[in-house]
Length: 430
Image 1 (cartoon, rainbow, N blue to C red):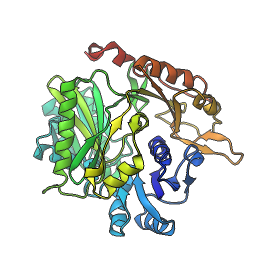
Image 2 (image 1 turned 90 degrees about the vertical axis):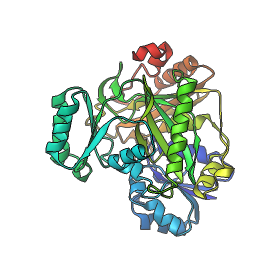
Image 3 (image 1 turned 30 degrees about the vertical axis):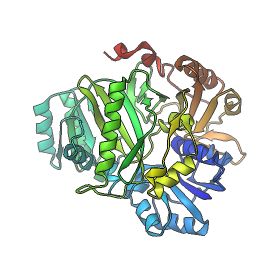
Image 4 (image 1 turned 45 degrees about the vertical axis):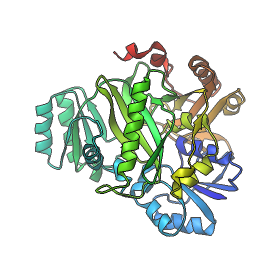
């Protein structure tokens, strides 16, 4: 069958890699794709993933039998709605379902209505009221632009002044329309953990848990990023916590199929959790696969991803079966110098083939392209995800860093402590 994946980052390379392994995959297209997807699929650089009519026309012209939507923006824009209306199976929720990520206020109200534990919050359309609530709660606080802000609309404010500045930044237009409504919430404490689930017809099928590293520098210091490394499974998660998170994901999936939040949710639901002293609480929902969580979860998936995604897309939850490898997976992100701030592009990348020649190592491309000479070059802040599998956490982690040392480009930066705290146990977060 012919498959179209929308997106061009590390998540989409990982999804495409898993789909391409299926015997059912005939022709695979990725729009726009990157330097890595070019090796396993047809990159479609001129297709706007948020233009529903253009995507539909491409799908019809190329007899696409499954569309997989990677990023959140096309989901919020309703691309899945248009494709489904035309009879094309889509992995991804409709526009209303995507509001679980597209609107922080909608997501919080969804949690409140369904008894899902989360941080105390209020939503505001008035700057003065938001500032007053910040003063009432006191620091530390989390200030969130309500809409999509390319991952930059969330500020963890350790001081009241920082929280007030974040509120003003939203209402002053720093995040465009996304910041015209602002959510202010208490800051939860504890280790974070991600749990993704395939969701179809109100049923959730949870994947393996993963733990991301958001800060730019070693020791969890520096600015927040899209993620500098990740591993799966998560050794510090207790059986009780895992059972609670699975129950929350199942409750959330069921709520998407009934009023007042009823929608056509057929895709991936991402649960971002904080493992608080009172138990797991939801930090956020995303309406798609996480990035970089996908890069360690899918390599541990046993079975055919095409079968699974098609069952989700066609509303056949009874046909979804998941099994997971006992292997550990660790991913280290190689980033451009200056990321998450400004950075230069076009740096030639060497050594990827050497890294991939290692046993149980996969290199997923996030921000890469090919120059006119056919050389692999940097084209983004997060450039590569170096993933290694192993029989133990230590083996996978050591292998990942050995592979990182083989890859070179000017200004390459990466954290040297991915997974280090998890090896030290729960006390490392206390």
